[in-house]
Length: 336
Image (cartoon, rainbow, N blue to C red; front, top):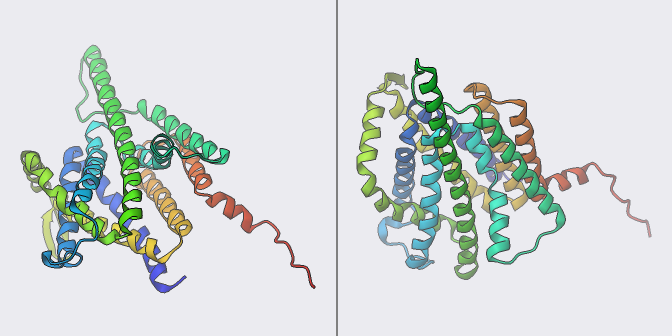
């Protein structure tokens, strides 16, 4: 492994894990800030890409703009709905576990659209991932808490708890929808690259630049959450004093850019096995940190579900099989 690959792996853990921390800080302060965070993330990556990949508008495209418009539709819908789910009483650990089920959605889309067939072991892996997500979802349904104060009337309190549960169910539906939209995007992206060649940096730039117009109708919502962020207590950082939520937002956008860039570099420097292992371990580290540092509720059922998801992921990507092979005795070559 060369230095560039090792540095990319390090940046995946530093950038992506810290990015999850800042996102959780944001949504704990303001559950509706996910839309603003997504917009600023798109704006930052598009601005950097305009100067580098786009060469200030003079760069030649390798993929037609019409194809990008469809890709952007999938990408923007998936990104916005994933972050918008925090508005519906979805905890960060459940959010991360749910997104780890992308393999399940990809497989379902592959069978339905591309008519693919998979070996039995991969179906077992998908069953484990699905079972793990179901267990975690059922366990989390008993810990739903809305953004409200406790009511004195017991009957009224029960009604409010039921309303919170209904909002949580809507959040689960939104996460499921985002999961399958992301899987459909992956299939479309695969066909796009097979036809026009792989141009990941160009795709990254255009999938963040074009959707910026989609946020125009949501301007009142963005302005509202900017005001909420400005009204949070001030905090000192590197000699500067600024509202706490503004600082989290800046750090979230920077670490998100670092995370995405590191993953793109990793895909060019390492085999897909190394990339998948790195991303899987990163998700697990982020989940552990969220549970321990933010004291998110996590029962024995959650741990069982999480293990099923990650073991299933490792089986599906053949990481577990390759790991076991490392400890099996190798056949000695016969001396001629």
